[in-house]
Amino acid sequence: MSDQISDFRLTPEELAKFKEQGFIGPLKVYEPEDMEKRWNEIRRAIPDRSLAIYPENSLGAVTNLSNYDRHLDIDLLSEHIMNRAIAERVSSILGPDLLCWRTEFFPKYQGDEGTDWHQASTFGNASGRPQIQWPTVNDAPAFGGTITAWTAFTHSTRENGCLQLMPGTHRVMNYDESLGMSYNPETINKLEKDSIKRGFFGYDYRQLQKDPDWRPDESQAFSLVMQPGECVIFWSTLMHGSLPHTGSKKDYRMGFATRYVPTSVKVYPDSEDVAEYGGKIPLDNFASVLVSGKDEHGINRLTDRSRRDYTFTPWDFTRPAGS
Image (cartoon, rainbow, N blue to C red; front, side, top):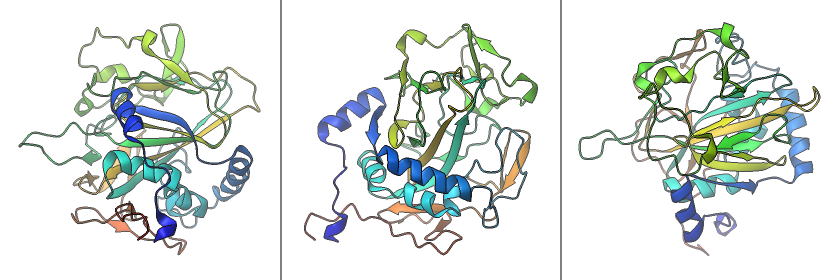
């Protein structure tokens, strides 16, 4: 196991900074030229849905066929969720027993609106139904959230719609996800907030505000410019969004988000499908991936391989050096 000894765990100083700010990054995961090669291969694999776990056209046009959980059928994405540069850092935060429960592509093309400021604790924002459920603490619901590792598969600039973050905003939720939001694809690319074109893929996140008069404080925000192969790791409860794409047609932005929780968190509790964006995706073939450690809770359906017969080998981050 000596070849699996961690090189990427967060130092005490980095962990303290993460707890204070709610994010760490940008962090290099791949060299830019390596990322370009990987993305070109992934891009060629995306149209082949013969092994994808969700039926074609399950959701609306906004979340297209390729958006969710392609790590379960594309080998390079299967490898990516296990990448030590990401997984070991996340395990520093969440502990050694770690699941990847969702991945998503986030493209942005010329003229696309920015993504509205938002936070996610249960991911029930669209339907009002929690998609993750942390165990209770002293008979009270835990605060929740997930750790998101957002990797730039292409250049991510202010002009092509890079991420924006509000450091330190991860401890208090400004939104009530149990309210749910109404889906209206007619609003896509048509909403303006504070003179910036911002929407939420056919939803209006303002519908979830606990205080209808509250507004995000833009003065707290900064833009996260990233090179291909760089990653940012953040709490999903951190206020985050993105700028609109105002650049050229060929300068599109592609991000890929991997979402992690401890094995004690219930994924899709009591759910047979995910209902959002005007459609549903059935969860018959869904399973989380054990990325590191062990699953001693047995509350989630797990897979140790993708549908391509790609064997997942979880890293054991708990073993001492030299073992």
